Image (cartoon, rainbow over all chains, first blue to last red; front, side):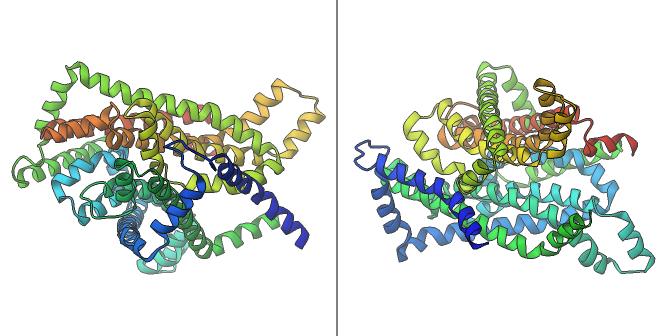
Amino acid sequence: MNARRLRAFGLELWLPVVLVAVWWFASAGSTSPYFPSLQSILAQFASDWLSPSATRNLLPSLELLASGYAIAVIVGGAVGVLLGTVRALEEATRPLLEILRAIPGVAVLPLFIVLLGIELPMKIALIAFGCVWPVLLNTIDGVRGIEPLLLDVAKSYKIGAARRLTSIILPGASPQIFAGARTALAIAIIIMVVAETVGGTGGIGYFLLTAERNFAITSMWGAIVALGLLGYILNILFRLLEGGVLRWHRLLQSRLEAQL
Amino acid sequence: MIAAQAGVLFLGVLIWWAVSTQVPADGVPSPVETSGALVALAATGPFWLAVWETVQTFLIGILICIIVGVPVGLAIGRSRLATQSTRLSFDFLRTIPPIAILPLVLLLYGPTPTMVLVMVVLGAIWPIVIQSVYAANQTEPQLDDMARAFQISGWRRITTIFIPGVLPFVLTGLRVGTTICLLLTITGELLGGAPGIGSSIITAQESLNNPQMYAYVVVAALLGLIVNVGFWAAQRRVLHWHPSFRGEGQK
């Protein structure tokens, strides 16, 4: 068993290792201004992002991302449950939702600047606006996909609305809600970078574009690495959370498959 | 129901109009001003040029993603060894925010459609590749065995078993890919300054022409709407036999 694990581990790992090694050696003596050696990129990355001063750019970004994303998930989830349960409301609002959803999140940036200024509230609102749609639409689908029999049983046992929500609707829709939240996470990071180019109060996006404008190419590459790692780490955290919350779902599915 | 839907849309416009009267100093143009600006724009050449630039970049981008991403994904998915070897790399590449490479492509190509295209392809191809790998993994070996037993071979096996089997999964990846593709096209134009709807929004903003800026945002939304509806219609047509669509007529 252990040898098999090791083999699978090696199989997954060899390509990334080879790719990084190729990058390392191919760029080693690089004199190209746009493609500095990986060694210097990593050194720059360490001094820009692994030192105590890095928090100056990292913390504002994380704060912004977390606030905007949290609002999107909460609002999207709440409105999604409402529209998912009240069918007439969902059908009536569908065209309006489809139009709002179709607006590319970054296109409303100038519009939000006019309405809310260039400070933090505008940036949070921009992220929330861009991310709310996948959560909202997936939640509607998830709620609508709940076995109607369950709701009928709950009704005939006179189970109250609050308990129906927490023990039937939310758990039933949670796999779909998570799917929407995962798409929203990727969009949130894109919009975060765009939002940070406005106003200049720090943040990874601000650092990235300032480095580009000042032709600080190695710093720019370091920021690209930082942003890539941030995306990867956030995805792993997301997967851990999802795995924890949806444990029952996976167990149920494997049990169903075992019965077949 | 259509009356209710129209009512809600009308209510939305009404709220917009109410907001526009509350915000001082022409901050938000009213729906009437915006549609006036849109009609005026529609009579000009630069407007259609900007729309065409955006549509073109988007279409070429998604086409490259499909032509490269689907075959590569399917080929990798056919082999367990290749699937395992590439899993971690794809997983990492997928999570890199595509916007991270915007400064790099901007330095390499300047504010051109090529710059946007490179970023769009590098950003939108991963969901398509990953879903294609997944699709090829999911093909049922029983169907292959059956085809072999009935001596169905070559072309017919591909068109009747392989393609219908992978299509639902590939289309899921394509839907995510198309959304990201359009978002990145507009983003690249807006931040990078390549010609198109995105940079027209900024130009209108910088010349303090708010009605025009809103008109371009409306155009971006219409474009998104057309893409979504078009995709949905195409998916319905291609997957009419699939359980997720088959049930629709019986409601």
